[in-house]
Amino acid sequence: MEKQHNRGQEGAGLACVKLSAPAGEEFMFRERAEGSNAITEIFASVYRQIGDNPDIGYSPFLGECYMGHLRYSTTGRSGISNVHPFLRRSNYRANTLSLCGNFNLTNIDEIFCTLADEGQHPRRKADTALLLEQLGHALDCETAAMRSRYGEAAGELESVHRIEEEIRFENILRKCAPMWDGGFVICGMSGSGEMFAVRDPWGIRGAHYFIDDEIFVLASERPVIQTVMNVDALQVEELQPGEALLVGRNGEPRISRIMEPQRRSACVFERIYFSRGSDKDIYRERKALGAAVVPQVLESVGHDMDNTVFSFIPNTAEVAFIGMVEELNRRLDKEKLAALESLPVPYDAEKASMIMGRRVRSEKVAIKDIKLRTFIAESSGRNNLANHVYDVTYGVVRPGVDNLVVIDDSIVRGTTLRESIISILARLKPAKLVIVSSAPQIRYPDFYGIDMSDMGELAAFRAAVALTPRSRLEEICRKCEEQERVMPVQYVNYVSELYDALTPEDISAEIVRMLTPPGTEPEVDIVFPPARSLRDSVPNHTGDWYFTGDYPTRGGMICVNRAFIRYYRNEYPG
Image (cartoon, rainbow, N blue to C red; front, top):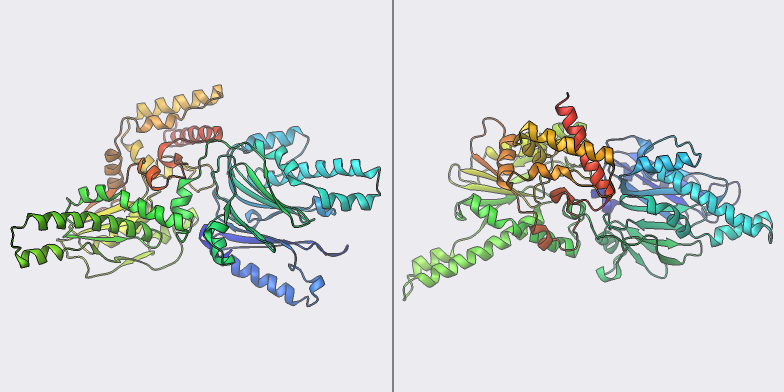
């Protein structure tokens, strides 16, 4: 869990099943806490409870099955009641269910109505709570059917024991999962020791696992398993879209196809932003992203590498920075070789030495003072946090002479740029300040589990709106509302029409105007790579709806049009 702390700073929880617990003793334990120190808190509590019960047979949290979760909210809801794992209790171990996951569903209203039509009375509309009730109800039905079959040949107690040994969660998942629209890896375990992890059929969210003779483990990312288990990358498998990894009470793992795989749309933004760069493939991909933006960077500084300092915004952009510098060096080497070849023979040693002495000037200019990331921080504290995140290294930029190029992994809302970075870097008085994003312009919101569902917060979207006549915005909104009334089988993303009349350069220029604080002295430019460069840099993660609007599911298309309607009707009422 500590190795995945980068994926969630708002809370943490764990659950444990103790298969040997006798009647009268708890068999499923759970501990949860909020805040950035939640991991430390929950394990301190676990160790304290174990210490209070020195008899191993009765100690809580000393069991066979464990499930942990790091919380990163995508809906704005907070509080301990929203921290995973969730728990649905029963006096029957096979009917007790704990659930956690990395997911967001787009059709939660549909699931709610299905449960209500079955006669249930859901008390909450949160997706985790509804999934817990949906899966729990299916689990109750499955165990009831098994009890009915076994009851004639065995007594009640024997039937219960047979259910605990023989229940197969793939039957339950096949009843429920086909209804889910969105990105998900959902994990669960019953009190009788049946465990599962199921991945969405589009492969939007990631899951990897390792199995040997003694243990099986599943996590969102491969390097976490490599580090903790000390195994090679080839020993860690990827759970494929639509598959579930299940482990029965007997400890035997199995892979089952739950849903037919759809068009693979592994989330590229999760790959760029959340995933740990220590993975060998991710490291290579992030370097490629940094190299891909070099043409735009050189154009911005007039190809003047001699009077340009290159740096990065720590800490997540460091690998992209390495890739950018490597590509700059390759281009500089070509320039130096051409200059040497143009020298008359015999060579002028002084001129040759000057040519060979040219270097890409890379420095650590921005220094991050605190560990929290403003994108993951709760929205209420982002602006205040942004003011205090960075400091700068003085003396490495020649005032009024050098350009300063600083690369970041992405520009989502632009809050940190506007409130902190541009003003602080401007103190170095560069001739020109160039902010580089290794990711393309983020034009569309996300509805699959990344906290970008509010369209009006996206810097690129706000820039496009500022450049678009109101009559055109009204027309797009009307099309979205008409589609909402008709509810066709095939949805169209009408929000994409907002960008049809605009060039990427138009939008970038408007983003500069929006994010540059008044009174900033150096000229500021913000550079993005083209969206098509993602396919070359991150070829196996084609879920690029943030940049292209190409949502892989029907629910995504519905949500983007509804998000535009909400934005437009709130901003332009009447």
